[in-house]
Image (tube, rainbow, N blue to C red; front, side, top):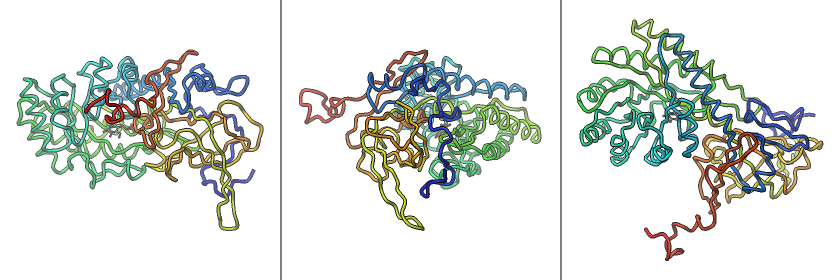
Length: 470
Ligand SMILES: Cc1ncc(COP(=O)(O)O)c(C=O)c1O
């Protein structure tokens, strides 16, 4: 079948419309005898009937084994170079109390980036020593709480923060371990808005200013300097950016050893995943081995011991473990002018959209989609899955093939939505945010309930004179 004139070059009509590519879908995703998708042994139609749509579905076993695999990969790679590794789960990707408990049970620490994420991690019962606090503008209250409960590390992002964290540590009579976030200037190959280590951006301290910043940290008896931190961006496939950041940081790391102990090096997160079939993300073992080999080799050149290496992946752990389930509401064929005439684009509108997945609108992110409640022998049709919001940019899946007979009432599933969908969700157009359901061994349980109309009105104090007040 020839490619559709509106199809992007990376997309081709599927050889098997019912296929669920293993590198994009949760590991337990299957089609049952009737063609319906099951995840964690639970039929998608059953989930829709019981919990409604849209619905976030997380394959618990998959999320946990990706966490375990990531930790194992970095632990083994570190051991091969005579050091140790620590893996922080970047909870901004997806956080609820149960997810935090899964990660800790698998041996990971947790990276939080706000007072809210800190509160959820603490509510989950995570030992504070296993938490790292990030943020380029942590409030004094956030710092105070973090220091007060005894978080294991605070990543300092500006000179002003050195004084704030030191003052909080003095108030609490603690010595607070800190890292210093460096803007290494490395340009990661990713979407512009995701590349956080360019020079002209808000995170971290330029390399050249770091020696003075570390000296300022060391001048405070209430602070203990752990080492440097860099995060070069997100959804990165090529390891070269990480290697270059490691090289730049280690040169500084080596120089800082003259003034005191520098036990760690934190290289952040950002390891990419496959969102569509043609994406070829590196295996996490490959990333870990390449990173640790580069760190060890640079340390060898500099004549210093290999430090403990910390990383902070989020997406690679939780992204592929989650899917979003939608019901099709309308379909519409739109004639579009192309070079040599017109082509038809089919819009398939679903009952969610940019409020449950902001990434296509924010980053032009691509996704794939599958008909979930049945299979079909109809020919593949190029579709654009749109949401129900009042924005033309409200796209869920920009380009994908679905069977030509896709129709209202069909259930469709978008895979690889475990990261940065629930956590970026909103109430735009006063849509109620969907529930998050975990599936495992044929059972489903609600982790976060879906919002109701009452939730939508709860903070409107004039609509609720008897209820919530400011
Ligand atoms: C400082 C920091 N660490 C880790 C992460 C996690 O990135 P990812 O989910 O791509 O691994 C982010 C994401 O933006 C981040 O800003």
